[in-house]
Length: 377
Image (cartoon, rainbow, N blue to C red; front, side, top):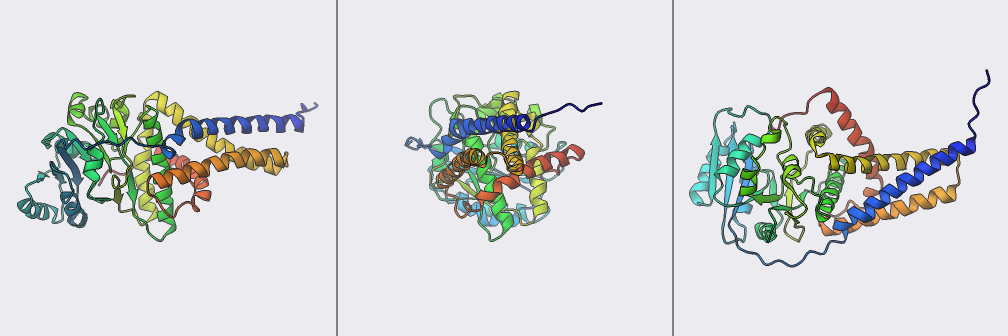
């Protein structure tokens, strides 16, 4: 029986059409959404001086608390407190906190000495910290984070104007001399480019708990984390995904407004961290799953079809020009966003890091299908 004939030209035309489609989708994302952060020019806002409660959850974080809490307590802001939830620490964290609290009355300790948390993750201790806060503005960070300046609280609090109930900031990582550090910082940069750009177009889908703020009344009225209490992660992104609207979110990326975290030093630990982060994606609202999915699929398709068309030897000039347009867009958005977020020394690495992430995220998702991610601590 004669096999059906499928002309080589037709195959190449189909592949080229798909390549162009992936390219067009990518360009819509680059210049319709992701450019928002790259070209963002924030309006000057005068600090209101409204009281702020900084809330931190810590478990066995003695060293980080000792190094970072003094920097938070030294913030140049007229009215704030720092609430630290000591979640069943087995080190000397409680003794350190009690000593610091004697010297500075702005430090409030919420101590959990028994395992009352029936759900994995830090949502239960964080809820206790938020409910114990005296002020309506809740500014969140982690024990392994330090503010980039003594104006951190002032910058973040200044965005609470009008209808704003949520302020999203940037959580950077320390620079280290390693390939893993470059990967972590590049991935962190691109996560921020996406969630901050989406917020700037009124489509907020997440924030990062290392640096974001919201009103306590919003947390109470929306019943906190009750809708996703059984999910290990999501105290930041799932909560924001559920309560953000087109009008109640502001972005703060000015100098001194970001936090700096201690990065993981082994690939295995970072991989487990990303497994926890990725595990929440399936709980996002449908519109965000579709938008983020279209970006990821078109990105993967663009690179895959580019490689395939080169192998097939299809018109190198056309393929090369399309690739160049997309590549220049990617580099421009990356560079301008780096400048906006005060990131340094990863631009050259970003030329190849995108390919790593295209493979990395599907791998993380695949592993999560067969086993649950680790708990918070």
